[in-house]
Structure formats: structure tokens, C-alpha cells
Length: 173
Ligand SMILES: CC(C)(COP(=O)(O)OP(=O)(O)OC[C@H]1O[C@@H](n2cnc3c(N)ncnc32)[C@H](O)[C@@H]1OP(=O)(O)O)[C@@H](O)C(=O)NCCC(=O)NCCS
Image (cartoon, rainbow, N blue to C red; front, side):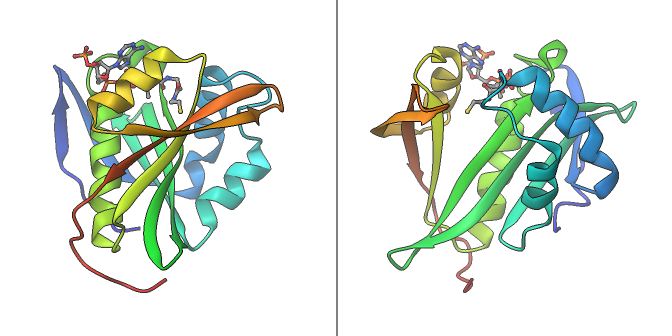
């Protein structure tokens, strides 16, 4: 993981440090995901084990000065039709730490990392009943490109949102 030495960054009066995931983070990210998402959308511990260790995925941690988990995000790099893309798997911010710019910091750091790895666009899915998250992504430059029927739990639709990115460096998968 290449994000081990991110400096302390100021997120609206709330200093957090961005760093790469380590295995000891697993229980805390699982617990936060359980708070952030309803059953059926949240990931199991086993899924997080896979997501955080898979070669094409990476996870960024935002922690407070007291080393408490403030948020995290997981992404993967995929190649579809010859185009390298980033796919945001999840982004979770502790409810007590929201609206302080931490989600935005995590997204921008993920995008930077994906661009370094050759990604030309970043794609994500967001529930149609979550206008707050849709607004969050719109504010970061994501545009809705499709609707996936029953994507969540077979009954809740997802909007697909995408953003084009500048390629910083081209690498092969
Ligand atoms: C979505 C989420 C990651 C945002 O994290 P955050 O740290 O609160 O976001 P930020 O403070 O960086 O927000 C940046 C901007 O996005 C927009 N935004 C963020 N949350 C919003 C909300 N609930 N409603 C409307 N706009 C919102 C605002 O424009 C905000 O700027 P402002 O606070 O100056 O108005 C967080 O609410 C969360 O973890 N939610 C639960 C999990 C989730 O829904 N994840 C995404 C689903 S795919």
C-alpha cells in the first residue's frame, strides 16, 4: 500500500491522517460498515478480508489524531474493454465525524491513487434512496450514467455514477 505516509490533513477543523489499511483495522472497519449500511448492503467480515487483501483492491483509512477510525474507503482497479477503471467498493465515515470533509478527502486520495495506477475513470454505485450520498458524489464531479434495477437486495435500485480522470501514470494490471 503506497499511502502509508500521508501527512495529517485538515478536514474542516478536523485533522485526520490518511494511511493505508493494516490487518488490525479489520474489526473497526467492519463495525463502522455495520453502522453505515443496512443489513443486505453492508459487507461481512469475510468479504472485508477478501476486499482488503485482493491484489487489485486497496483500502484507505482516515484516523483522528487520537488514532480513532474516522472513516475508510475501499476501491479496486479493473480493466473493462481495455480501459483501466477504478471502482469504489465502499466509503464509510463515522456518523460523529460527518460533514467535516473527511469523505471528500478519502475520495480525492483514492482517485489520486487510481490515476497513478493508470485509471481513466472511476465508477461507483449508489442507492436510489440515498440522495445525500448522490449529492456527495455529484459535488466531486460524478455523473449518473445508468440505473441498475434491484442491484441491492434484489429490490432496491442503484444509480451508476462515473467520473473521468486524468491519467498520471499508465501501468498494466
Ligand atoms: C456519504 C459519506 C461518505 C459522506 O462523508 P462526509 O465525510 O460526511 O462528507 P464530506 O463532509 O466530505 O462532504 C462533502 C460535501 O458532500 C456533500 N454531502 C455530504 N454528505 C451529504 C448529505 N448527507 N446530504 C447532502 N450533501 C452531502 C456536501 O456538499 C458536503 O459539503 P458541505 O458539508 O460543505 O455541504 C457519509 O455520509 C457516509 O459515510 N454515509 C454512510 C455510508 C454511505 O452512504 N456511503 C456512500 C454510499 S455509496
